[in-house]
Image 1 (cartoon, rainbow, N blue to C red):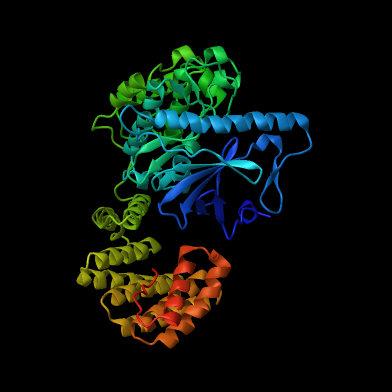
Image 2 (image 1 turned 180 degrees about the vertical axis):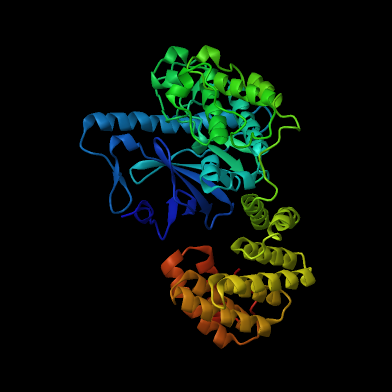
Length: 516
């Protein structure tokens, strides 16, 4: 049984006191918790939340068939479990204290609920904006797209924002002691905030709980040397993240033990065109930041910020090669990210940079994707002359590469139909959607989600042509596939069910939009 299956509370709806939450993603596994992104369901206040489920992995906890936690029959483990449980309750109190300011709430700290007891464990709901954990941005490969910079500038911007998150914590007299990409949330507006205060203590408090994460925990935490723990302990973790972003791995104990270790050179990623002076400064920064000796590290966020700002001149270039297909690919990724965020102007900027490279060799799969994306952008901007031009380029190139039958050709047809739909040419859109459905059924099978999407789009076109009986037929073909693959509570499944209900129960039909 998978973790997600074990957590099926009313079809993925987790009920906690007055909250009903739909779990949206597989959890991030923390040292003593699972961290979920969730959406509020049927609440007066809408939006997304972070849900932390207390789960001390090293105690050998398990779930029963109903999703409840149970421990092995070991009195020492039960004692440890209860001790850690107290820390979870204390975490919410610390978070609330950090958030309180003299006149209003401090926006650099998220609002924590009091832990809710359920399933023999604790759940903490954390208010947050839409966004991603830093670990997700790194692991998904969208780190540079998020910061709209494919060079070293994205790394510096991210690092400064992490310092912005850590500084108010220290100013309020606390140490976090568990800073890592798993515990840094970036909102869609690029604000970084720390979460998980389970290990946090006041700077003058004795440390009794040592939460360790390989690569991010300072030597004094690993050795449980409470006398050496201080601000420099947190700043080791911050420097370790900077190290990871630059070098694409976390520091090892050997890295930290050698004071004059040289980590970077002119051949390193992002630094091929940087001056030697800047490379030297960056190496010294890393040496100081991840030193095994606390006294040799940075002792304040301000000092760390001062040194990093001194290394951000405009001539800090990156290693982009203007004619490299990999550069074009990165531009396309960044354009697609801006496109999905609704920023058409910025998306067009990146797509056009990619276009300059791709047009030198346009018979590639990347060219097909780029032309299709450009057509979609121009469609949203209602420049239909450019839309038609790029759809024709996409179709011509795709057929030349793949022949007449291929998933990419079906995708282009689907997007062309979507443009016709927006122009209220429902009959023409319907013909294309039917062609898409037939192609996807042959290529992917009857029960593939893309085939089901095509069925839903056919239904939508029929509904707009006031042929509701035929629309109902196609929606009913699409619905069981969506339920089987996505589940009953997925937004796309709910949308189809709502449309079926509208056709069945109402004479006025204010709905129906095709899915891309």
